[in-house]
Image 1: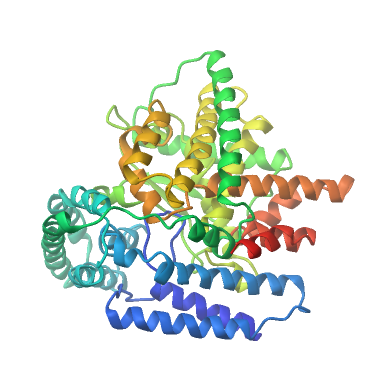
Image 2: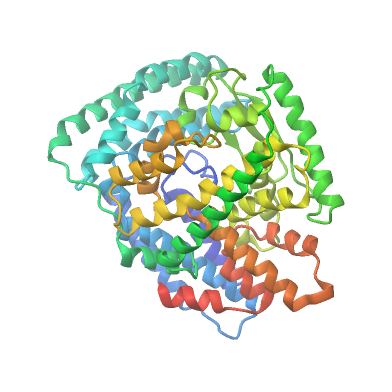
Length: 542
């Protein structure tokens, strides 16, 4: 093993133990056995010391004469460390965001419950440990939150109002599935955790009058993030300009499509029908991509399957996307999307995938497939999640790919849904950027989103605008990854065609992009085309 690979594996192991939890369904890492979060003062100081050591060692391994793939790995590790520096110092949510500790406590348990049963001895012990760690995490929250944002405290208080009933429901459905003595320990741990979360909520209420307003990263920090962390060549201003043009184009296409007419089909009659339809849609999508010469069928990669929502998971599903996309240690396992029983109570994205499960497959299913292909990559440094930019960009690109290639020619509902998503994701860029650079306050970004998303159903924005604004504050410059990743991807593919001429094949390019989908697109451009202009621009900006 060369020195760079060895260092990279150390860094990924450190990130698995120390990187904060988020609600992003793509932003998930496999944790060490028995892992629980630790935000004590000693742990945070140790993280900063470890980060400085990794940064120093990486600088010492720079080799401008190395083959391009090795240099790409060197830059990849640099962006990983820049992200860690961002989390610890430049935008320290652990000091400013009360909601951050909901992710580090309840969110940790939610994510650990996503893989399907059984709950054997090892897994049961791990779940109990995570539930039992919640009170300690909230003690660290009280010690660390020296500059909490009032608006995020308000959101957190409302989010925690029903927590007692939610944990009681989790216990009712989970405890009977655990082996003794873990069952009794889990019941007690959940009771203690619910009480601690209630106490945290009341502590926030007491502190709320003394809290200041939310403060954005600001324009300089935003440019640094985009250049040094995300390795993106676009300035914030360029991103807004791109998104506005894309949003106008998508909304016009949507108007044309709606002018063609056609009513939305009803939701499917029951969950078993929805599960069967999803299996059929998966076969149809895979066959279409292969027959059209767009993407080779995956080799040793599992399926993306619908499954009934477990009773122990349902109360916590607001914390993230309820699907298990597997991980590097199980790249051939099936991924599972948990679904509720179809009915009139379903809204937003859940309703759309209960009308036609293809809605989930042409984006969320792409995540599972693309990530699993990446986890089979021969270069171990390319197997781990890096950033939403390439991952979300590929999935968003795939939506328009199959739309334009004709998969939905006979289905007006799927055409309208794909165009709705194109428009909303383009418009999110502006909300994300303007909040991050300080042009919007949190209340202003909520108003802005309500004005633009008021009639939008595809992702439930009408009901979730406030939560969406809190997401933008917690992970600034992430919502733009769909559109900006797709924009970079389109430019890369078109440039590849111009260079390769008659030798160009979409299947070949897509196969390579999917298997390297965890790597920033500016780095892939350099590796695939020998063109490092995007990387140079990002370096100059960061």
